[in-house]
Structure formats: structure tokens, C-alpha cells
Image 1: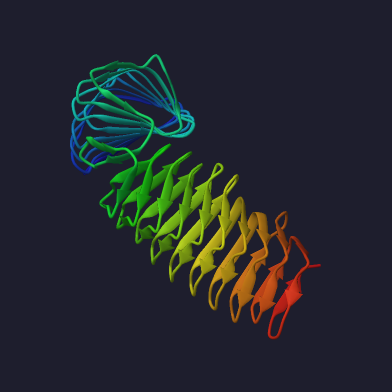
Image 2: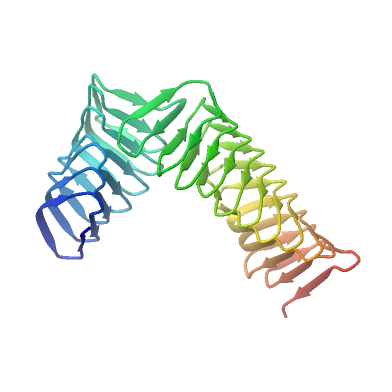
Amino acid sequence: MTDTYVYYGETVSNLVLSAGDLLWVGEGGTATNVAVGSGGTAADYGGQIGGMAVSGGGVVQVASGGTVYGAALAGTLTVSSGGTVTESVVQQGGVVVDGPGGTIGALTVSTGGTLVLAGGSATGTTAAGGTVVSTGVVLVGTQGGASYASGTVSGLSVSSAGTLYVLSGGTVSGITVAERGNVYVGAGGAAQSANVVLGTMTVDGGSTTGTIVGNGGGEAVSGGGTTTGTILETGGVQVVASGGTATATLVEAYADQTLEGGSSEDAQVASGGTQYVFLGSSLNTTVTQSGSVDVFSGAVAAGMILSGGNAYINGDSSATQVLSGGVEAVAW
């Protein structure tokens, strides 16, 4: 296994990435004529990668400021916010995922290839026998290739770094997100009664109800996404970022709900659980026994009920009810 890092002003060329190999290209770095074999990974975090050939099982990640051009893609390429892919071809078995904030230009999707539009923009795309998907449910495997379904998908298990995309009009019910599995719920998509164990569920514009997040699992909510009735079991984490809303979350012992610009409404923080309000608002949270809420400077909490629980306030707090055994500590 070989790791190659390309920093500002540096250039590498004629690389072959085998299983376990990594190419990382940072801002101002350049890589050309790169072959990504099965199990190899190329990550573009602000640089440029040109003339790349990606075999089945190869993985490419294009993040903010990164540009990939002139690529022949039979593996899996994911474009995240600020990343760009252009003048490239998706071949048999190849999958390109255009995530929120990503940009696709001059892409040809050949027979057997798939382009998944998961919130990014695409201009100049040509479907030359391939498939372009923007609705329904899409499962992208780690070895390339994608499976598509419309309507509702039930009882599926997502694991081993596979990713399930729930797009507009798609619904998943009773799914399990196991170790290294990922689920993305975009605008107009919905997930019901999911069980997240050692995997991650990202709710970006879509909605979830009745999710259970177990030890090592995580739920991230942003961009107009909503969750209702999530249960955070021991070791589970929920992060609510800007534009996200979590309603009626239950935070059990040694679980965390973290607000980073989003809002939480009607949460219950049980014994040993913690709600961190770094930025955003916590409304009508009930804190029982030895549960705790930490409200940091610039954040807001309103309508808390402290029934044996504790609140530590360094931000703004109003209309708190302190019942038997409850404590509210306010920083001066």
C-alpha cells in the first residue's frame, strides 16, 4: 500500500494505484495520467487530476476546489460541494454521483454507465446509452455499478462502504445501515424506521421518521432536512447543521445530540445523555435525571424543562422550568 500526497506547486504523473493505494491532491497540486485500479483511491481536495483511467472497484473523490478532467470512469466517482468533473466519460459499470454543490460539465454517460444527480448541477451531459438518475432510490456498490428502484424500497441492508441514495420521490422503509454503510436522503426523499448501526445517515433536504441510531452510528441533518422521532441509543450521535431540524429526538445514556446551526424541537435528554448547542436553537427540550444540555455562546435555548437534569448556559436561555432535582447554571 502506497500513499502519494501532492501539495501546492507539485506535479506527479504516470501513477498506477492498486488495492490499498491512495493519491491525495491538495490545493494547487496537479496529477496527470493516473490509473486507479480496483481498491485504489484518488482524492482531489483542491487540485487538478487530468487523464485518469478508473477501473471497476476504483474510487475517486472530488471535493471543494478540486477538478477532474479527461477521465475514463468504470469505477465510482463522487463529486461533493465545490468539486468539478468535466470532459469525461462514464463507461460500462461506472458510476458518477453529483452531490450537493458539485458541478458536472461535458460528461458522456455511455452504455452501462450511470450518473446519479444527488443535488449537484450538470450541464452539457450526454446520455449515450447510459442512465441518468435524479429520482427514486439508487444503491451504489463499492465495486462500481448501481441498482435503481422507483417508489418504496423495504428491508435493505447497506454496508461495507456502499451508499444508498434516496432521491426525490423515493422512500426507504425498515432498512439497516451497518458497518461503513451510508445513506443519503435528498430533497423529496424519505426514510422510515431505519436502523443505523456503525453506519451514517445524511439527511440533506429529505426527511426521516422513527430512525434508531445505535452505538457507532450517526445521523447528520442539514439543508432543509428534517427528522422526527429519532432515538439515539448508547454511543449514537445526531448532528444538526444549518437548515436542519430535528423534532422529538430521544437522547439516551452516553448518546449525543449536537446542534451546529440547526434546530432541535421537543427533544428528550435522558439520564446520561447530552445535548450540545454550539450554534442554533434548542426549543422545548426536556432533561431528566442526570441528562445535560450545554448551551454555548451565540446559541439559544428556550422552554427547557429540567426535571432532575442539568443545563449549563453560556448563550441565551429563556422560559426555563426548573423542577425537582433540576439545575440551571448560567455563566456571568
